[in-house]
Image (cartoon, rainbow, N blue to C red):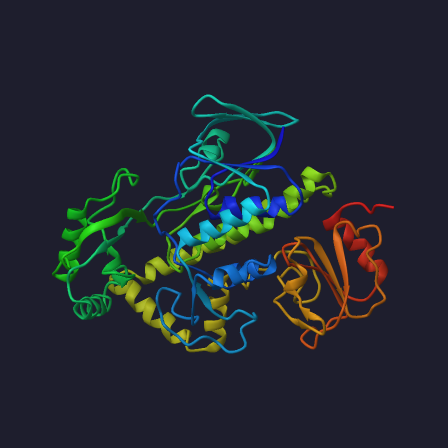
Length: 475
């Protein structure tokens, strides 16, 4: 009996696998593709995902392979300066290809003892009160206590479960690919700059050795988006919008994506859960997709581990849906809004100009930056301090940094009073007595995902909150 089978070895599945292994959960990742993908769907990590990597001691690996870029210009491509005093120690975007992110997360998972089986496609599943039976395409039968579908927008797991996936179909489609261009780079840059004055879905970004990442609006919406466009189709659309195909040749890969928005009705059905694109799809505007999936995994991992290890309080696993479903709904809303603002029609262009004016107000700009980068997310933990339910940013302590204390994926009581205790929960919660000039509360209880579950200095009040997130005390 495997503890958890994860269907899908993309960033969401690999992040989840690593989180589960921190708690000694036996994990098997099934990935239908025999080789890692060459497609670079995502180009970077936003602030909250950068924080997530820092919380688990992975950030140095990512920084070594990425480039830091100034925040700004992510809401519908409207460029504004980054607001002052953003609530994070990582006020930048990390440019890093999805292929590299997947490789680094796979390496981390392997270090922790995760088994990853490539070329294994899930074909069916059934569940009972004790576990999940999984059938692979080659007829192999597997059994696990839980199953998580991280298998993308066309998720087999979601379809077999019969979970509804309501939303809107694609109305527009964009061609995307990497290819060589023979045109002079200065000419390419000049043409792209001119076209993007009116068409922000057009672009040609140089990579290396004459290779460019090229995007251009498609002629229409394909009946089957799994069928990639041809190079000739690409060149034709380049000529339509730019008057030239830039001498495009030798494509590395070609793909197409639409602006469909869909959200799974439920993230959990018994012992089967959904995460990442299996739970939500939306336009890539603002670069939020990969980040949203990684953050799903970060929320789910410790909760599912608690269930497997037998200490989860009632309702903890269900809180995954309760907390993450509204976050995804908000991302779908903001990507819909951004997509409208990218339209070349007069009405949306008028609204775009108005939004651009509003973003000159720093609080509006800050609000939209926090929305896109996910540092504005606040889970509903009830009434209390303004930080309750929000993740706590990294703060400097007398003895180091806050995030250095969170690498093991456990709960944390940061105690500036030295008078509190987590006796009875010491196997799940670390108690650190230290202080920070950046923290104006006596003590803070953090969940393993860094969200603030309690703040104060009253021991009895703390004892009333610990069981809610960390189960019963052990004598």
